[in-house]
Image (cartoon, rainbow, N blue to C red; front, side):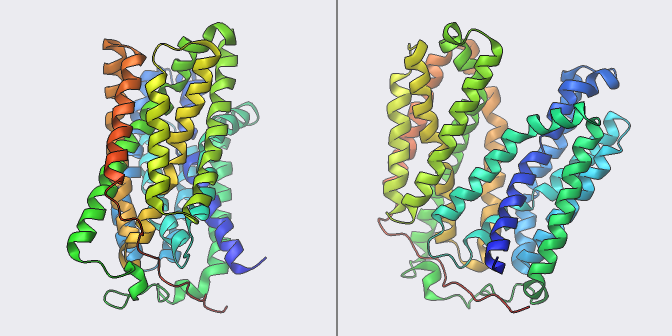
Length: 406
């Protein structure tokens, strides 16, 4: 296997581990810690909050450091630091101790998105499919967290659920260090420095006003799409219970239906990734926003199989949109600033996610899910209108660098 393929595999493994490790505590708290430590699930959840805050806030300094030191070096720090934090969490003996450990875990987990994505698009003229595949690995990490944690709880205890992924992460870090040692030693020498980027970095070198316009559109759509994604992803099991519960017959079947909807919708990322490499990003973005508008508009009042089919429809639009913004940043941003911009994008995303659940609760308690669907349709409509302002041809990424020889 070539170094490039190994590198790509490790970047994807990092995305899987990033989302897996940050969700182990959620299952452990629900299944065993509430009994072991004599606290309710509601009392334990706040101890995870500092970790999720760190997960978002530390994305920006992680990107800044990666652009000024070494992206490859920061990936080693991510793998090893995440692994050590996981193992340290396994030895916590009180809620306070586990809260501190989860905060440290969140700091290291924050490294992945700005740094991993910057490495993923670096030197790829067509990065859409790579971003989409990487996104699927992240989704697998989310989906596997409860499954693997439950297995380890039944076969060794909750501490093992932290130790095993911690060891795997450290091993990945050591392999990454061995494979990418020349790039780490070069201190990011392969990334163009400020003022030394090629004209291809920004396509036809658009002016400051054009860059500000592109940035405003990207960050606006990031906020709205993040709100939609978090709201409907969190609410989907409850939506299916209300609208399809008579068909499903049990909570277990509702869970399986939700899993199947998520699984099939995740495949839309691969379709959109392929489309981004072949068609103008504006067209792909408008298509996913239009799909959301259409299916959200016809969802109110539906029940039974029709509700299930339409739910799959709007989730395809929501999930399909996930790789597009990261693709646009990869095209727009200068190489030497890319990790920092990804960091800012994820800080904004996590701030929006923090606001999504209170908003969802308020809309549902006041009006019910039909008003939520109308609200999500309105948000998708705003995305559609904003994306219409994007240029038909986006700037191209920099030429592919040649890896340093070992």
